[in-house]
Length: 157
Image 1 (tube, rainbow, N blue to C red):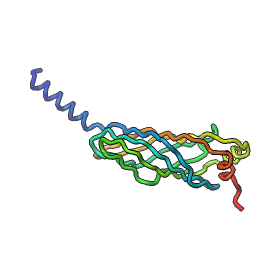
Image 2 (image 1 turned 45 degrees about the vertical axis):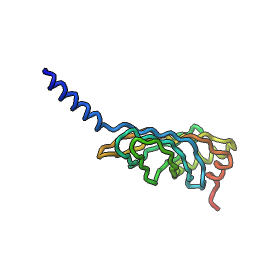
Image 3 (image 1 turned 90 degrees about the horizontal axis):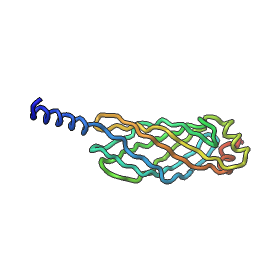
């Protein structure tokens, strides 16, 4: 193979590598609870995000599982607001997360213990950028107080 062919192959590989999306970084820094009802909760998560790509990335969906007090799949978390990460920038975003209780009996059992319970919302965020898709992990942790658990489990009057 002569030098010009090697240079052409190297340029092609470099061009392909530049088109490859890199997963953004999403690191939660704070979680606040706005509302808790017997059907679910409204949270606001502050995240530090970094998009290492040359193009903006827009979140197109989130798949999550929620564990509370060691009990898996007691809720489903949904992010409804669009999230766009500008290219090559580190930014701070506030993301509203709607949580729907899927196992009211587990929530009631946790409330009966009258103790705080740690929770984990984890999953994958799907992004699209420049016509290509990529996923990145999301993990949000916190603690529900015994009062919050009681509010979530409180029977409707």
